[in-house]
Each structure stands twice: as C-alpha cells, then as structure tokens.
Length: 219
Length: 245
Image (cartoon, rainbow over all chains, first blue to last red; front, top):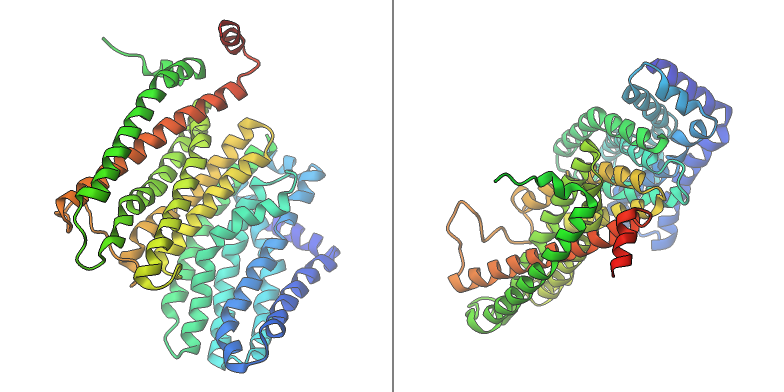
C-alpha cells in the first residue's frame, strides 16, 4: 500500500512532467537572480551562496506543496484513502516521500551545478548536496502538515507559506550553516548531525500530525 | 461542598462567570501596573553599568515571559479542545492568540529600544531574537489559519494541530541563550538560585509580570465572551440574554 502510493504519485507526476520541471526551473531562476541583483563580486557571492541556494530550495519545495493532496481531494481519491484499512499516516508518509522524489531529489542534483556558478569549493559543493539531501525530505514532511491543514481553503497557497515557512527556519539555519562552516574550513558534521536528527524526528511525527490534519480537513 | 467545575465548561455558564470575573482581573491589573511602574521608575535604583536604560527590563522581561507562557497555555487549551472535543477550550485558545501575538511584538519592540543604546543596533540576528520572531510568525500563522476557515469547529481543530506543532519552538527560545553563545544575556532570575539583582528591581519586575498576567486573563475572558456570543448567536440562551438586556 505504502509503495503503491509512491508508485502512483510518481506515475501521476511523470504524466505531468511540466509541473516537475516548473519547480526545478523556478529553483534555478531564483538562484540565478541573486548574482544579477547584488552584482558579480566573487567573494561576496561565495559567502552568500549557501543561504541563497537554501532559501531557493525552501521556496521551490513550498510552491509544489499544494499539489500533494489537492488533486486527490478534488477527485475524491483522498476520501477513499481515508476509508481504507491502512493507517492514514503511512499513506501520508508515502505521499510526502513521493513529493520529495519529485521535487527534492532534482534540487539536490542540480544544486552543486548552481554552486559552481557561485564559485564554491569542491568540499563545500559536496556538503551542499549532502545537506540538501538530508534537509529536503524534512521540508516535504513538514510541508505535508501545512498542505493537509489548508486543504480546500480559499487562498490556500499563500496561507500555506505563512504556516510552513516559520517551521522551515531551523532546517534553513542548519542546512546553510553546514555549507558555510565547510567553506570557512570548519567541520560541518555537527550541522549535518542536527539535520539528520530533524529528519528522523519529522519522519516519526510529521506523518502522524498531517494525518490528523487531513481527517479534520475532510470531515 | 463539592463544586461541579464542569458546570463552567458550558459556554452559557462560563459567559456569566467570565462577566463577573473580568472587572475583578481588570482592576487588579490596573492597580498592579500602577504600583509596578511606580517601583520601576521611582523606587528601583539606577544600574551602575547601564544607568537608566536598564529600566526597560521592567516591561521587556514580563512581556517576553508572557509571550512564551501564553503560547504554551494556548497550545494546552487547543490540545484539550482537540482531545476532548470541548468547544469552550478551543474558544479560549482562539481568544489567547491575539494577546500572545501582542506580547511577542512588544517583547521584540522593547528589546529593540534597549538594544540600540546597549548593543548599538536595533536588531541583531541572535538565536533568542530570531526564535522570538519565529514565535510571532507562529502566532500570526495560527490566527491566519483560523481566519481562513469558515467552519469554526474545523478552524479550532486545524489551529490546534498547528499550535501543537509550533510548541517545539518554546524550549528553543528558552534555552537558546544556554545552547548558543549569543549576544542576549542569560537569565538573571531563576527558581533555583537566588536572584542576581537588587531586591527592589526584582520586586518591580515580579509585580509587572503579575500585572501582565492579570491583564491577559481579563482580556482573554473578555474576548472569549465575544467569541461565545458570536458562535452561539442562534441559541436560545443568547436570545434570552438579549431579551433581558
């Protein structure tokens, strides 16, 4: 059932490839805007890069949150899933993972290339990819709570940003912090360990909270 | 004689109880504010390091405490409302949010006013300041979510989940000065040690916090009454109330 949800969501995403690419290009464009806005001074860009890439990743991941439940909600699939004997939190976990595979993984893969534009060192590029790899699933999991809470509300898209972005802040701090530490020549493992801890905690708690939120929204 | 406390979990009986208690808490709050402000401005001695500017703590520390306490209390009531499906608990949670947001804003504002002469900057990106700012965002998110949902019962429950998810932030704010080396100073007052400040200063601060408590209780009671009336406007007892008035 869990695998079935992931498979189904991935299939749906592949059928609408444009949606996936839009998120990815949004990420690339936002990151590329910063050098144009602040000027091409290389040292400044290098110190800004972790923050810029991470903020862009946050926004890109958030933009696609609405899709996580809304189409299933509109055609009634979600209601059937709620009625199924499988635990709802497992289904939510599956949907969040599918969301991460569709939006998070492309970001992780493309981020090092964008990092080169910002003249990051090889070590820093590696840490950037690892921090995104650990951090983006957290974004999808926390985002699932926001998406479930705002399901079917007017102005849901703007509202979800108000709910989810404050909760994203710790991930942003430690994700960008890891890359900054690495480009300053320090050890990034403390930041990465904390990101890993966030991931484990949100893996356990977020599907459960999102499932409760879904039940409230559908009821 | 056993008092049946559950009697007051009904909005109708709570409405009249809150009506009786509100003036009591308002008057106490007023008296405590006057006494507290008198002590803070005229009785408490001038600090040898910070001279007169330190006096902002008499308002800054109490409102910062309140901003955290109120969030915990709000989340607590919201959780009770979610678990036991009691309407009144959720209404109280909704009523607490604006007051909590105001205290959070005041804590940031007074902190900025103090920070300018002391640190030389209105704002620094320090762990405690940032997490207090996140707290403000959480309050705003809670209110925005509740405002966006038309069905009040769904709004209560959705808000409760958001409030509970946000509770994670409170220990982060509280311990941020211990965990990170930040610009913001550590706690001067604690339950386990004797305070590291002059007694009059401490008295002033404690009276001001009590005043803030009383003010919050009075305001929350008033707001809960309004919410009760708004939600129960179609019931018999509200129309009887109207007929009597």
